[in-house]
Amino acid sequence: MRIFSGIQPTGDKHLGNWSGGFRQYAATQDRGDDAFFCIVDLHSITVEYDPEELREQTLDLAAMLFATGLDPERSTVFIQSHVPAHTEAAWLLGSATSFGELRRMTQFKDKAERQEFISAGLFTYPVLQAADILLYQTDAVPVGEDQRQHIELARDVAERFNARHGETFTLPAMIAPEVGGRIMDLQEPERKMSTTGGTPQGTVRMLDEPEVVRKKFKSAVTDSGSEVLRADDKPGITNLIEIMGVATGEPLEGIESRYDGAGYGAFKTDVGEAVVELLAPIQARYHELRSDPRELQRLLARGAEKAREASDPTLQAMLDAMGFVRSEFGRNFGAARPREL
Ligand code: ATP
Ligand code: LTN
Image (cartoon, rainbow, N blue to C red; front, side):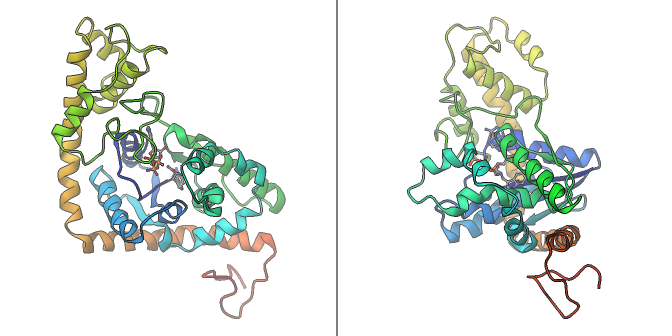
């Protein structure tokens, strides 16, 4: 099965990203899937950013992807801007995406509210995401729940393109984890944990020191009552039970019965401890990998080579189908070569 997912290099990565992203990516290897993981630096320039930070954070994220379990022998990890097919395909797919579809995207509306300068790139962001996915004839996209609307758009665009120009793309499906597809902010459990849109105290960063992690869990907001049980009117405690479940792998019912009568205080301390234990080996591997940027660059260059090979046939098929002149006299469109003369 062909898998593709993307992750932004800007904004420190957090426990939500691990639960909806990293953890799922590593699981694809155990299933023997053919998987591509892309550091989407071109998406990160759609909001205000610092170029020097982007460069550093791109390598930070590469180290984090390997530290959380991706094996460069089994998975392809690469940087989006190293594969020009992504930007070419995004332009082509823009003609198969409607203004109305893009205007309905909730991520655009949320992010636009926080920007003084709302870039055209922020608006067309989901078209580039569709290009990312469709170029690889992707069967399944592991993401968190917040990406559902974007994956559905990619599917709609693929269907429209196939109907207009003939079968070109596989229709991608989304895979979200059954538990932990939407980890909530520890201070404001009505919104998702996020370094770009959450509260600093309610967001557990992958690189937070153990003491910081413990403190964040101790001060997590809980709900009225004292039962450790999941319920719609207990978003705080429900979130903590889910976090305990994904950190330890224990079924949620087991956690609830184990903490029957224990009270919120003891439970919060234990969830904090479980997360500290989860993060410790990841942080150690991360620091080791990050200390050798040359090796990271080498692995990423190899990933880009594999990604170029895998995506080029789709780009060629798109160009053929859309009516561009295909010539035997050298390059006729960007980095593309004619498929057959
Ligand atoms: P942030 O909100 O912190 O800016 P993001 O969602 O915008 O993060 P990425 O870092 O690219 O951007 O996300 C990587 C993966 O993490 C995506 O698959 C996304 O769905 C998932 N993810 C992000 N936040 C959460 C969360 N709170 N719970 C579960 N999964 C999440
Ligand atoms: N929009 C996603 C990141 C992303 C992505 C992708 C995810 C860009 N391209 C392709 C899956 C597949 C986000 O904000 N998390």
